[in-house]
Image (tube, rainbow, N blue to C red):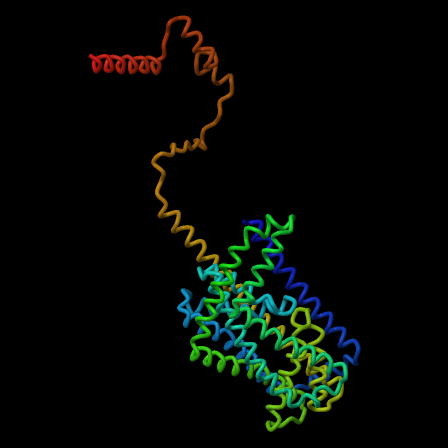
Length: 427
C-alpha cells in the first residue's frame, strides 16, 4: 500500500510539472513571436483598480463552484458534511488544470469522496449530474455567442477550430446524458468489456471485473436518475452554475478596461459571450488547461472585440491566463493540501480507535519481551558461574555424581505428586 501511495503522489507531481512546463513553454512561444517589450508595457500600464476587480471575479467564481456539488449531495442525503464536500469540490480546478482534456477533476473527487465513506457508484452519479449541469450552463452561454459567430471568426483558422470545438462540446454533453440515463448504452459498454475479456492476455485482468462494472453502472445510473427526478434541485443548481460561470466570463470585460480599452457597459453581454465562445471553441484540445489553443483563442477575441494591436491583445491574454489559470490552480492546490492534511488526521484517529477497542486473543501465547538491559555472557563467564564449567558440562557432571539441582528436584517432586493423585483417583 505504501508503494501505491508513493506512486500516486509521484504521478500527481509529474502531472503538475508537465502541465506547468507545457503552459509556460506555450506562453513563452507566443510572446517570443511578438515584441515582448510592447506586451509587458501594455501590462505595466494596466489600471490596478480593474485588475483587482478581475481577481475578485475569479474569487467569486471559485467560491461558488463547489456549491452545486454540495446542494446535490445534500439532496441525495449523502453522508458527508458540507465542509468536506466543499473542499473536495474546490480541488477540481487543480486536477483539471494538470490533465489532458481537463478530465482529472472528477476521478480525483470520486477517490476523495470514497475516503470519507461515500460509495464510488453514488459519488459517480453525483458528479455526472454536476458535470451535466455545468455543461448545460456553459452550453447556454455558448449558444448565445453564436449570434456573433461571423464577427468572432474573421480569422479563417479560428473559424475551423470553432466549428470543431462547438461540435465536440455538444456531442460530449449528449453522450454524458446518455451514459447517465440509457440502459442500452450501459449494456453496450458491458458487452464491449466482456468482449475484451475474451482476449486471452486480457481475460485474467478484465474478466473478474465485468460483473462489478455492470453493478457500478447500474448504481451510478440509479443515483443520477434519482437526482434528475428532483426538478427543483436541478433548477437551483443550474441557476447557481449560470451565475458562477457569469463571474468567470466577465473577467475578460474588466481585463479590457484594465488595459485602458474603451469598452462600455453596453457591450458587457457581448464580451461575456465572446469569452464563452473562445473557451468552447478550444475545450477539445488534449493539452492541460487547453494550453496553446486558449491563448490563440483569446488573442483573436481581444482583436475582434476592440480591434487592438497584437501587443495589447497578447497583454490581455497574459493577464487572463495568469488569473484564470495559474491563480485558480494555486487556490485549488491549497484546498487539496488542506484535504490531505485533514484526512491524514482522520486516518490516524481511526487507527487509534481500532487499536483501543481491539480485544486481546485469549488463545494467543504471551509475547516474550527480551530484557533490553540484559547482557549476553561469554563462555568464560558462564564457566565462572558454575564452578569453571559451562552449563552443559556442569549438568553432565551432576548427573554422574548423583547431584540434582534444586529446580530439577522440585520438578521430580511435582511429577510424583501428580502420579500419586492419578493413582488415588483410579482407586
